Amino acid sequence: HEPPPGSPELAGRQLKVASLGSGKPIFSDLSFDPTLYGGYIATQKGVVALVAQRYSSGGSSTSPVRVAYGSASMDYEAYGSPITTTVMRADDAQAILDVSPENDLVLWAHWSGTSVRNSDIKLYVSHLDGTGVRSIYSHTGEISGGQFSPDGRYILLTAITSDTGEPVETQAAILLDTADHSLVETPVYTLATSTVSVQTIGGYFRRPLALRGTFLRKGAFAGKVLIMSQDKNGMLFTMHDVADPSAVTLVQLMGGPATLGWLREEQEGSGLIINGMTGFSEFSGDPPASSGVFFMRLSPGKPATVTYRPDVSAFFLPTFGIRNGYFIYSDNRPTPAALSYALYSIPESLLGNDKIAPTQVYTATEPNNGSLVTERTSQNLRWYLGRSLLAYVQGGSLHARTYDGSKDAKLENGVTSLFTPVLSATMVWLH
Image (tube, rainbow, N blue to C red):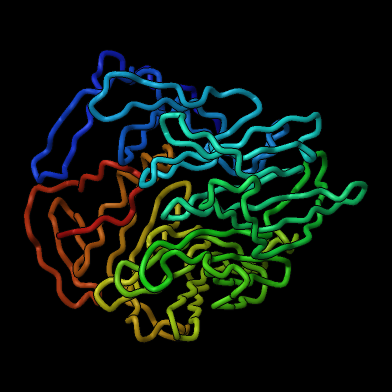
């Protein structure tokens, strides 16, 4: 899906930036023409403007980068300056991989060659104003992802190499250490490798990613790398320390066909929760006989716990997490006629007990008018999660309810909806 570049509906508008550091908002104008851009990133020193954020999850016939911002043009304006600078102009041979707002850095790839699967790819890092360009890595083949560590020192990506004449490819999760600017070659550490069969379905080549990874940012796992290795037998999760990439500090295997959904670093506590769908995997090839949802919780110094909910819709659930001693998760079931959704809770101490009957904290069914998911979501998901209470609207009244469902208070009449400025934000704090 490639949206048209720019935002023509914003003609005549003035972009502003607000600084909140002093406690009182300080507003200043930006020189960007809002009709030309599709998104913005506020950084420590200025604002990045993107012409279009075009995401590609499976690669294309022309790009050897499988997951990225895509061929977006990027401009930059420093705070307090009326001058805008073009950092990158989109063409057919380069893509933005990641932007680090905290460290004033951008990572991008440029490639050449006549074959996508054997492209000569070069990775670069620079400051957001276009200065300090450094070539940090070269690879012949394809790459997936590309992300900065929280401190901007390390880069994580998957390098993909095709074996000539064979319907297989080698995927490697690698870590780059960019700390020493004097080195001609950036140190490269291989965290995991996998050999993947390339399946042909009609004229479509299915090349699933066997390796996915991310930097963790919170709690006891902050700064570490979580890698998932997947094949038809299941998923293996490993934790790696960037200070000693060869050391694996956590290993957890989940057997059977499954597909990764979401990862949530807990707001309370120091662990993380991984969500996905059971019964189906890109690597199994067969349609699922039955499917459900799993939640895997990883905590320092404790065995991993996996909670299976076969009664929950197999749609991936971005709403789940620990709140006030309860594990909360949602279930959404759209049909041609109606959309039903519910919120459930399980005491945190009972995670991993699949026989426990969860408490249904909230449920509703509303007509499905067939509109876009984002519009339907904004109309129907009329509840917000807070640290200790659930806020929801029902029958024109605003309520607050505890997560065990035992206490419910009507706060105000005449309320028909709750406001969220970002439609994709499904978990919002209630203070």
